[in-house]
Length: 395
Image (cartoon, rainbow, N blue to C red):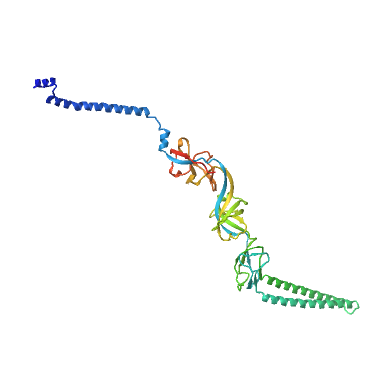
């Protein structure tokens, strides 16, 4: 058997026994080869990690992975402050006009709301027929007193002529003099009574206390009025108007008399220029607000009692100016996110100031050279790396 196998090998022919022996040895050789290849690969990987374990990812790779945010370098500029508020339009000097006499029935009305009137002009007339009769009676009393006074004077004159002849005594002359003086005094009393009646009757005529605009008429013809009836007319003295605006303590501190303001009535397209003429000296302890009074010239569009939007110019400061979207706030106060070294986000507390159409002034916390996150600050975290995109600052 062995001889045949060797002969077959020498002749170049594969015997069955030799084939089975080769098949048994082939898997062992393949496994050894794979084990050697795997070991070399593991060695190469371990060597690479040892060599590059301290390497930092490149800026380009980080930038490619980081979120892109818009930033702004605000710089510093003069910011004209503006305080927005709402207020009520009213007469600057509101003069109520009523009846101060004993009263009576209104027989005539000579002024309506919206009329311009002058000082002393008649607004309404109250019936005075009774007062006229009383005046006539008192005038008659004056004439009686005057007649008595003339008679007393004539008697005195005759007595003075007779006393020199001895027909009457000096005592008689004294009595005649006293009678004359009493008669003259009664004339004065009667005239004073007539003057009183005339003054009382004059008070039945309702007149304007000053030049101005009639804002309201609260009396009707035929109405019975007395001194306790209340206001019959309301007049804006000189036609001057004002706006009463309620502001916080902080805003009040930035305003002084003389500051210009712009007033726009509700429903109107046109604004009206005015000036602050009074700042409330006290603060309401409940609302922590005070009243600012803005003087306005008369205009038909300005109706007392209506509401108006008010923009008060509160001075100028030099500071960085940011849009509202860049300023965030929480329990710690107002803050912004800036992009610092290595494009890392930093939180920066700030204190805001005046508000204008161009943005909000930052009076503390920024120099103006920082790169401030313009939007999406609420989605960032301090220390986060971002890819900043600079946006030109608005001027």
